[in-house]
Length: 202
Figure 1 (cartoon, rainbow, N blue to C red):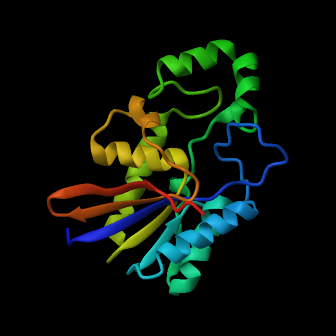
Figure 2 (figure 1 turned 135 degrees about the vertical axis):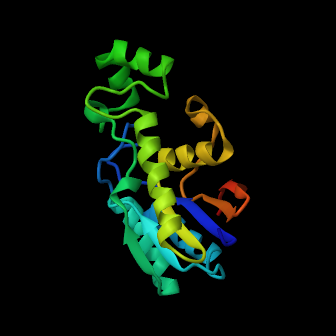
């Protein structure tokens, strides 16, 4: 593999009527004004980066982020549905407190087996990890030069677990703030994480 860089980023904050913490999963929620500002800051940070293509999921928050950054570089945005966030089934849209109250047994089981437990109607982190890693490898095979992937919090965590050799059950130990950048170098000797969860404080 020719030496290259993958810029793995997380989108900015999302548009909600309240500030309660919710399970979002694959709900298609756009960026709010602060999220758009965070994305523009990301674009400024990456203005001198040599990027040949930008990849994103088909969820609007990922696409908005990709399109804003790609516009200044005049590079193609390529949509990969496989880069979608983990699917959380019946929990999507509910607050953390609502899930703990409405699904107490499932909530407990999920906490006990974070990697392999499937939430009701959804997928496990292991399921999500398999499709995300497959998409990541496919992107590297199909592309040339440095690329940017506009990801999601758990998509990014799962990719970083894979690259760092961490078990999935430890994914919450990896921080991924809104508008962060991770830098991964790729070469014949493998992958190396050069930067993780980096944000600019305004």
